[in-house]
Amino acid sequence: MKSLKLWSALCATSLIGFGAVQAQSPVDCLIQTGEMSFENNSFLFTIQGAYNDSGSGDNDPILIRFSDLNNDGIALDFELTMTDLLNAIGEIPDCTAVTPEKKIRIIGTILGPSRVQWTGSVNPDPDWCIKVDFTGVRDCVGTTAEFSIDTAQVIWTFDIVPVECVEDAAGNRMGRRATLQLVKFGGDAENRVDFVGALFCVPVLGAQASLTDLQFRAYSGGVKKSSGNVNGDCAVNDEDLLIVLFNFGTNDAGADVNGDGQVNDEDLLTVLFNFGAEGC
Image (tube, rainbow, N blue to C red):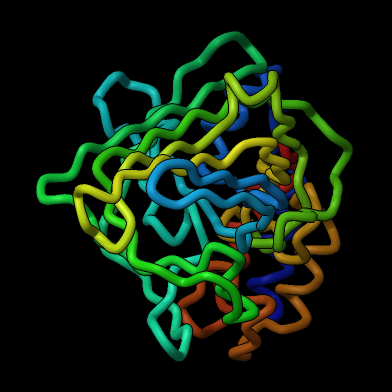
């Protein structure tokens, strides 16, 4: 009987006309997706003041989810912790990772149909005091010191470029292929992170730290698994339907569209109602 119900549902769905996805600008598609896989793949850092140093580093990939933090009706904003901005934060002496709950609010501004600029700043009171390995906490070597943050500023500028269903090279944080790539626009004036504070959290030892020559990898778009894209490609199609049908009645996590622990009618209906949907 269960098989008969499934077959009836499948046949009924074939009579439903699925409208084509309306053409959208790349920025509209980014907003619709609501998230991006992001990695600051490489940067140069400089420290000037009571202590002078320079070098290079990178950050671990993260998944950024957008919301409307400034109530302007545009959901392109997000918050980042200090660790998101700079992985080189650790405890002395064992370099155990620390994730301060201090966050910077980043606001997205649309500069055109395919360009977004994200900016954020914070002036904590009292200052944030963190421990930083200036040559990279991953190796637990080099100069490690406390640094207080009096101000922090972020500016990133991206062109949003449609791509043909590519692998997410920024850590695959979305868990699916992407249809948008975010490409850095401009130079250091449009892409940098700056800190003003003091070494060892002592005010008289003032210093400035900057991250420049930022090399990003960022991806978005595609169809989410929660919309029926079970296999993580860029469309809801026969392959997704067959995965759900062949695993119907099981607890197979790969076929469980809504993540409730069972592959059942709800998962099947999600695939059927979104059948034909493609990543914008």
